[in-house]
Amino acid sequence: MSRDRRLIRKLALDVPLGLAIALLALAVAQAQFQTGESGPFPQSWHGPGSPDRPPKFEPHFEPLPIGMYASIAVVAAAVMVRRIRPRAAFVAAVAAVTVIVLVGGYFGPVLLGPIVLTYTMASLYPPRAWAPWTAVALPMFLVGYLDRPYFGLYDIDLYVGVAVGAALFSVPAALGVIVRSRRETARRERDQELRRFAYEERLRIAREVHDVVGHSLSVINMHAGVALHVLHKRPDHVEPSLEAIRQTSKDALEELRGTLAVFRDPEGADRRREPLPGLERLDELVAGVASAGRAAEARTEGEPGPLPAAVDHAAYRIVQEALTNVVRHAGGAGAAVLITYRPAEVVVEITDDGPARPGQAPAEGNGIAGMRERARAVGGTLTAGPRPEGGFAVRAELPRGER
Image (cartoon, rainbow, N blue to C red):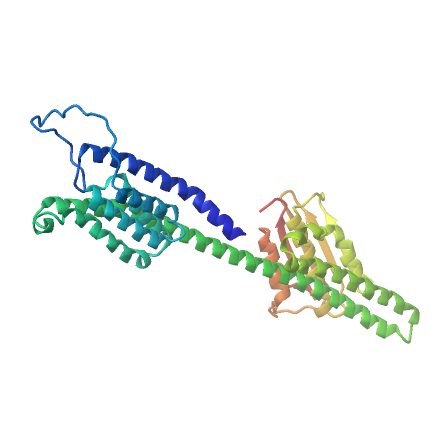
């Protein structure tokens, strides 16, 4: 259906153009035919016996030869389908104009047809696909001199006519090439932009999946270890761990379902998704770690205020990934989260009290790289590394305004 609409839109623009050229060509051809002008490029008319003063013109109507009517109709039809069959339309228009020159002895506005079609070919095809076709226009300029001595080869008018014709066709051809070049450049830039958006979307979803799955599985693993440890010693402590596993897995499934919904319905997914989690859920993250027996706390300094959704979500994910790394790599170390609100930025700092690792360079994996990408995406910075007094620290400085 969209193809039909495009076809109708093309015809809606080109049919009036073809009709306008036909009417103008008919009007001028009728006037030239009645005054008796001839030659491929009509000269000014002077009556006999008075080279400087034309005789009185007697208006009358004489029908044009049937060949001219048919040829003008062919030119109009060629212009109407110029964007459907450009090269075939160009050949048909040139042939029709050649017939008009043979029958009437002049060009007139009907030459606008091949000129418009030259522009159309140049704007739609690369030069190698349309330039050879312009050779069929050469006989159109030579046919008017066939009745002259030596076919007009010694007539300066022939070379002037060919030069003028070449100029008439060069301008629309150059304009068409420029239009096509700009269109191709815009298309390439649009394709590159779409590829970049697709890559960024895949990267965003990969980060979301990594953070949700990584954190949830780490918490589930921690609670499962606690449950196994107290299974025979303190059976009454098993139920809270199992409940935490159930709730953590449920929350993770809901977040994954919302994140992956974009693949099934890119347009409708955003309408169905809940708001992205932010720092208002910070206590849940800390409680999830603390419920398994890890020491964990969260503090806030400064005057809390609303944050842009992207910044709020990035801060939440950074805290989530940092706590996941504490659970995975810091043994039984405790964690502390400090959120500092400043006038122009919010500082997120996560530390643990693991053993000191002097001189040991931090090995950055996907987790730290993902946190750094999240901070950079909202115009912030992130640093991560071991602390001199022991443990590991992650510090992100995120702007409180939009990027």
